[in-house]
Image (cartoon, rainbow, N blue to C red; front, top):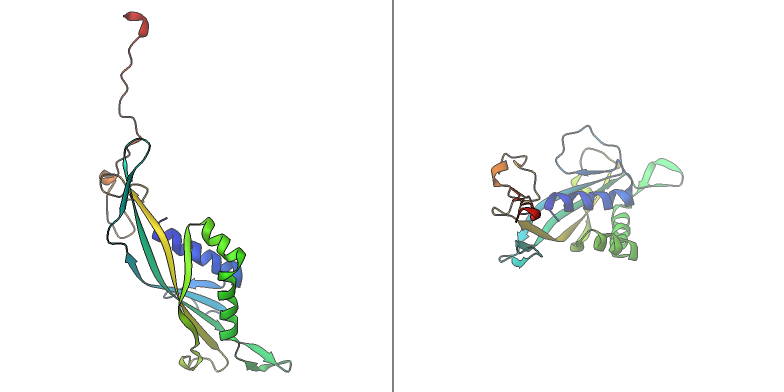
Length: 194
């Protein structure tokens, strides 16, 4: 699995729980959102120092490396109305975020992670950050740190096969893509001519 794939799969999983159209990457340029919504901010990555190299059935080397992505998940909500009044609201951000973390650990949540080759763990306890929000009087915020563990696979002479080249930042080029499974030429002889 590639890093971009893991980011999309985590977003897909969060969107399944909170609803499509409510999950965004932090720092995206967009209009102010109405609550509730969730932001995902990928803050770092660690890579296994030495990859595990094996040979595939055709004798070509394939490298596997563990990667752990660090993610901050922020939930923004208006909370729950108290006494039927939309003006007075109770802060539910921490309990709502904890409900999502329970979903991650559920049978269905674990099944999704296994199906997509990832493991998600909570790395920092959920905390209420509502005091940091100054722009809206009745907006609440909770945050939790997550780690997403995947196995990255690389192959080819430059470790670039299976990737889009050049990448979005201009790195790599099509000459770095070598496909060991492409037949360059075929020598055909007529069996009856001998």
